[in-house]
Amino acid sequence: MQVEEYLSAETLQARVRELAAEIERDFPDPDEPLLLVGVLKGACLFLADIVRAINRSVEIDFVAISSYGAATTTSGEVRILKDLDAAVHGKHVIIVEDILDTGLTLRFSYLIEALKARHAASVRVCVLLDKPSRRRVDLHADYRGFEIPDAFVVGYGMDYAEKYRNLPYVGILKLEAPE
Ligand code: 5GP
Image (tube, protein in one colour):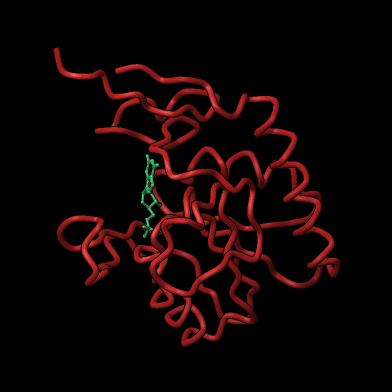
């Protein structure tokens, strides 16, 4: 299997700084608590970089979510495997996700509703990569790093069978043709 570089580390870092600036602009009041919630594991590097580029106080937390069955099923049933540690009451929450693909996992419309039910002041979604051609539910991100074509990507936190998460760039995984 081969990985072909698609978004370089420099390209990623430049866009992350722009997204951080957008978030700063949207939440100018330093007294308004801001909480970024990373969706494990794919968003961990993106979250780590974006919080370091945000020039105001910000809390971080993580959730782990799993879909039942194949990720491509239409049921899109989701389970929260690891809940937030932090209280969200009165905080502006931004869910940070690696990829918005079909939208079925991000159908934490469920997670969004749960955060609203816990009285978050607001809930937004920030994704590094968006594959709009694959979307099956009506969902769009408030902050979006890059729109990408329908390809399987790895690196910068994203895996194939738990490999490649540590690549500093985003690459397209090329499956070798059978002999
Ligand atoms: P969705 O529910 O939007 O279909 O799925 C989003 C999740 O599927 C992402 O958070 C990610 O974990 C996984 N995913 C979707 N496309 C890719 C891809 O190209 N590469 C990797 N590594 N994961 C993907």
